[in-house]
Image 1 (tube, rainbow, N blue to C red):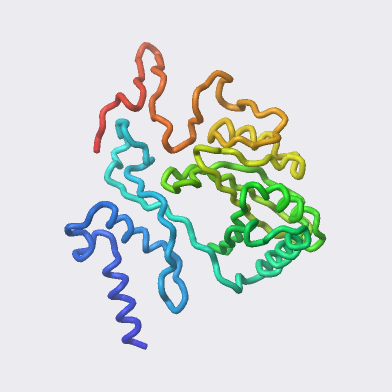
Image 2 (tube, rainbow, N blue to C red):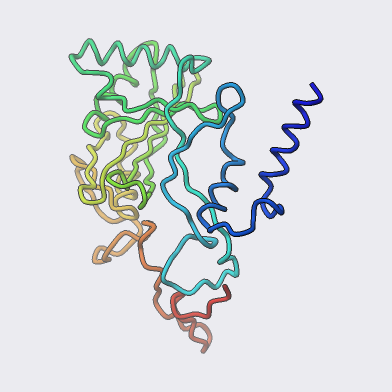
Length: 269
């Protein structure tokens, strides 16, 4: 028992950022991967679960080609997605997935083509759904008596420029008021074809959320009755919450002083 504890302590000491064995001669990418590994959940038999690294972010906000005025330009962070989980998922997760698979099969659909992967991470269940089937999945989750996810808390967008062919993700948070369960759906679309079917026929409350996600992230929700800007002016070019959106700005005059755009300010890195 004491030998195992010694091994764990040695591994923990070796993984600490800034330790004598970890920092010399490493590239920033290697250092990021090593530092990020400390936050990777333990896998089977004490091993490490292999995450899908989609980006390495430098600085506080990850913005490139602009002046870093934060003073945190030396920070390096990995952006990684958890892999598919193996059964048993635990709790009510297995039963919910089994019911959904059964419903899809009854409708003549291939469940493996509809559900890309099932992820259980930090005690939360996420289903990655092929975008063309998102409406069907939402309707099944809402209407089946053993699922009853009657409430959708909205949809938001995430941009992973390094996730090639799946750069834009639409994330739906569902709640079952009947069973007091929470479930997340995630749909991916390429930057070159940012289209996802609208689900407002199933969850009418998503009307405004889909408009906002299109406005700020550029995900086009096909079938939405009025996909218009919510935050930006109607003639605004681009979608400002994308990671590759330039960090420029509009000069603002305040009490006689002119505040320049961020990309023209001094860099402290």
